[in-house]
Length: 472
Image 1 (tube, rainbow, N blue to C red):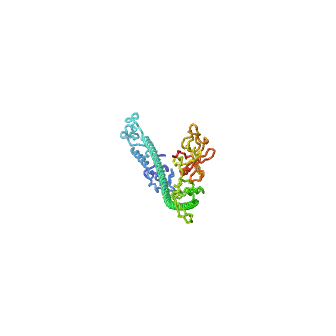
Image 2 (cartoon, rainbow, N blue to C red):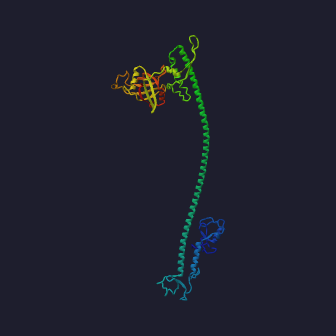
Image 3 (cartoon, rainbow, N blue to C red):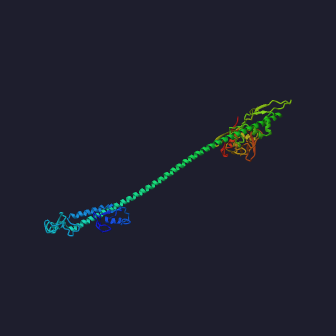
């Protein structure tokens, strides 16, 4: 099929009713054929079936490429002064040879010639001669080749443009989806911020409620502490009354030591009520029921002694005495040795012991003086029930290092400092236990019961004896 012919009707394109028109899909047909297609019920492109939206073929864009080819073809034919359908391909009579028609062209001299001119003036041996018919065919073939090349190039450009359009539409769709996603994220973030603000508001409200409950709890604890202090005060009053009654009985029997009668009657009650009576009435300090043995501390309370009957049956005047004045009359004995304790690197204090007169007490004195072999250093621990304190196994006795014979004791002993039970005094006993389990009282704790209590708060293997010595 000729490129200058319509694909549907096979008629050549012209500049009038058969002018080439291009659809939006880039296919082209003559105007007459397109008018018939548009008037049909379903106007589609015959090649790709694309929908035709124009209402008239004249509204479609002309195919300027076809228009340009038709114009050039007409211009080429008119230059030979021939009609398009002239079968003789003649350019008229030869000016030199009047009877001959111009049928040839001398390309060497670019002139039209007749048959006689090719014999003398333009022989084929010297000039390039071509007939009009062959020249028209050659020109037509060159033009068709150029048109085909241009068509391929234009179609390639159209494909490229269509690809650009498709890519652009794809990118536009991607941007729309991206914008939609960002919009959803923004809405989600706004909801998160809103929820966070609501949570903060709820936390603030809960904080106010907690602060109110905290104030109520502090007030309740304060009231409980005051009630506890009042109960301790009442207990102290009862203790003072008990002391007064006991002292009244003591004066009646004429004892020279007002404490001794109390100790003989009930040593446990004396220690718990007399020695600890003042220490337990401290509203500003924490009361620890597990703290069985406090430091020897007596509050200087005034004890009111009731009036006693005299020999003449006349009541004696009421007397008052303080606890400290009674202790001043009957002081504690002085200590002989001391042991300094520490727990986990913290200094706990020193325990002072008054030694008794027995071999075990002498052995402890020599231990503290460092004159015999067994070492006084080592790990100790305290039992929670009876406040026992041990040092662990000491070194074996070495006769060569002794300045005098030791007492009759095993070479390996276990030294125990403890308050196994209350002695009938206002002091705590200091004990030493042999490896066979036999215990011996070697002295009494004069000062430092609070140190033993502090040592109970540490693990068994974290309390050590830092130093021992003799009290001068």
